[in-house]
Figure 1 (cartoon, rainbow, N blue to C red):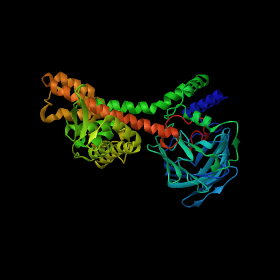
Figure 2: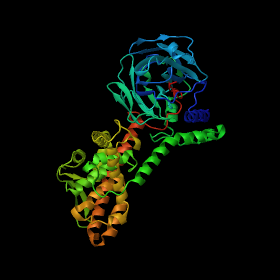
Figure 3: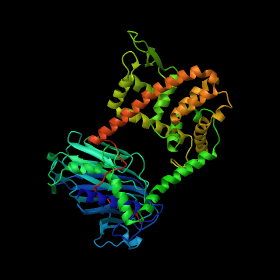
Figure 4: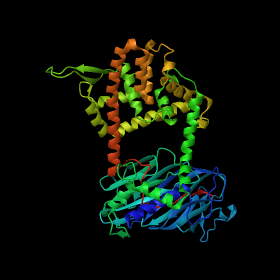
Length: 556
């Protein structure tokens, strides 16, 4: 039975890739309609039902209606209502998707499909619109042997109105405060977070939903919190949780779903084309970035006016570097170059062992991002300013959210600085085509510097030893993830400086050990916290076995 459920879930996943809506013959407009924000409030009743209210804000220029497909296999949908900024809509029993724009205006209705229902309402008027629609989901929370809970898809993949920012808030109707002592929370299908906030569960995107993204929330509640109408006495919620965790970022699962998806793809044919289609967007962006990189020349100076946060933002957004945490290593190395941090030898008291190196905090740096990291390192150091690697790892594990925030803030600050330089054609973007001429010039400096650092022939044409420029290069090589290659090139180019470079290389490796251990501790703590149900980062993968949801939606 469990394997059958996995196969069914896999089949549905293939359909998600294909963009098929079962039971509906209508096709969504690939139009200019765009829901910029979907905010969802969920109020859980004592009987396990929930009132779900969605708030859509966006621009609508084509089509006749908006709609949301919902599978109703183990739930019921009722009490559907809609309003906009001009007031409530009239519910119509016999909704027809082929009605005209005028006939749908100010009205809403439900269409039954082979898979469930579609909640439909007229666009009513073109332009900027703010829609509010609500519906009741019966059996939203079910009673299992060990706990009450749900695993529910709130926002579908393949909506025609993506990209969209999403936010979900879940509360108890009776005012019970939800926290990590009476509930467990997990989220799947999107890049973002799920957290307990002031007695509520809040899940939100940190990157707009696109293509096959969705928003799935799994919520586990102590049995005493409510009395669900639907009891699943032959199953534990632990089994629901295990199925959802498979192929997730929470450190569970054995990959069986991937095998099942592959099997279904073979059986149903054509799915391979869908997989290729799902990857097409990513491949297109990669191709654009590669073409841009090939078109720019070498750049041999400090990029972006020395704003390392901007450089970090551009490097991460346009595939110049591969890891957000590299900013910590770059900043630490920069502080070492400035003697704000210092590696010192400590002699063994009994003289029986080789001298060891220890990191000492000397003086506060002169740039904002370095100061912020310096304060974190100071909190992990002992009273004499000595920072041991194990102490930093322990501190990073215990304070992972603080360090995650620091990493995200540096990237966000870089984006803001880039925007203030009029780097975008409009207000934001992550494609080459979104950049202004100024933006392309700033990005060319970043791409050009990495090309320069990777080409020893180019580096040999300039005496980079002057003004310690080579140390600046090492900071950016660390940020780009190519520091080891660059320092080996420096050794070949400057054999007469080998003792200095060997010493610097040794110090760099110690620095790497510190920031890499820091990153690993943060990553482990975040995954441990998320897997335990206390909240944290969401998982792109996983979420299998969900209720509700569907494929598509938006406008048509």
